[in-house]
Image (cartoon, rainbow, N blue to C red; front, side, top):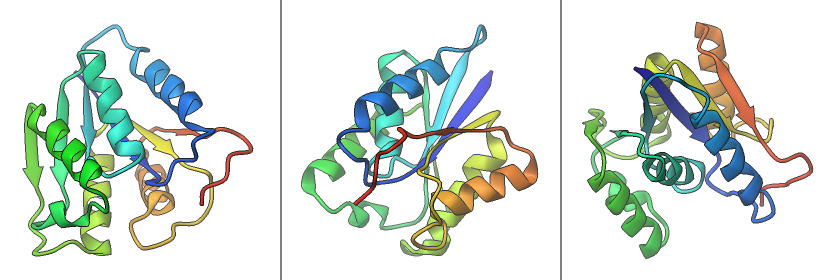
Length: 159
């Protein structure tokens, strides 16, 4: 089974969303053998990836960075979507961090990069805005030899 993971920005520009969705769909359809998806279900790229995977009938595997991760979702609809997606997962792993932190988020990104055959990176190419951000996980994955496919709409700018 091919395991495809995601790392990506939480704040997706509206003008980039259709392009990113199409590119994620294309990346998930490139295989002749069974595929599974691995994500931490963060707002933005992670939840988009999970929705696309489930819509394509791809099993969803989830890694939760810490205890209390539910408290990191800024809007009620984001938390509801997280819970709805997580409930559809075939596997959920919770890392043993006592509370949400940059270290816990980094650990979740490393967990994903260590296990996947391909890491999709919804990334504008800019440095991480905090430890464990997309740039950090891309650098880690590339350093260990995990194939990384960067997806970004040229000209789109995050807020």
